[in-house]
Image (cartoon, rainbow, N blue to C red; front, side, top):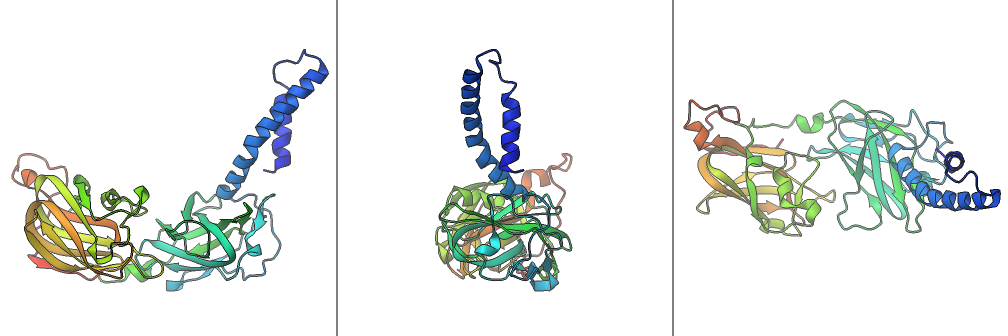
Length: 359
């Protein structure tokens, strides 16, 4: 939708406004004032819609960069088979693009990282989805905020083998808006899924706990509660705690624990990766260290308790934390009440204590 079509719609609506019996000059003056007010609101909204929906689907001019959307790990690649016209008022992303766009599997298994650099500091995001209407957005993973030239937004929640449409967007320090053509890539998550795994021995009951403490959190958006919300698109991040990071989960009932899991967060520069961690039960006995690393690492245990403190033992430093902390087991109350249906499926007895290879 162009600004011209918005103006036409506004003028048509204005013709039906009250006051048609007033003198022509008065009606025209009032109509112009109302038109200006509506335009002041409508124009930013239209620009915002273009950023989310990507504008029209008319063919565009050739790009000076290859149309290949990404040369990616695990056979994942991209193309611009259905390029789209850059909407009016938005500049081509190629005006500031300084490198090819490369998409690769994120080593944590959380999704795919889009890599691109620009010739000036800008705020960058990518919209993506299974259709040309997109529907999801990923912002740059640089937590420092502000504009920069090296961009690495992480697209999460991707299905292995699925083909995705995407666009890259940016806003410059002068307020200029930039947008790429509509491109495609196929997500190949098998590079992560093929790693050895340990199957969780029981349902994950971490969401039944409350986070009663943590070493720190980077901001409200990276709060410790994100570590037990079951959502892989959120994460808990500390404020530079490195190997001193910890999080405490408090259950209302005594729990029979058969396993623990840790899905580390990480930054694309290699920092913030948890390599090992320990679990202290009710402030007394410490178990581990257990192996972590990119992906979900499951370790089998056998203990009971109400309070579990996860301490990061070793890491690559920085803003360590977790996408998810998982606890596999059930409440002792439900386990000791055979005539009462438990809220979760019955668990299996696990081994006394062992560690796993990360998935």
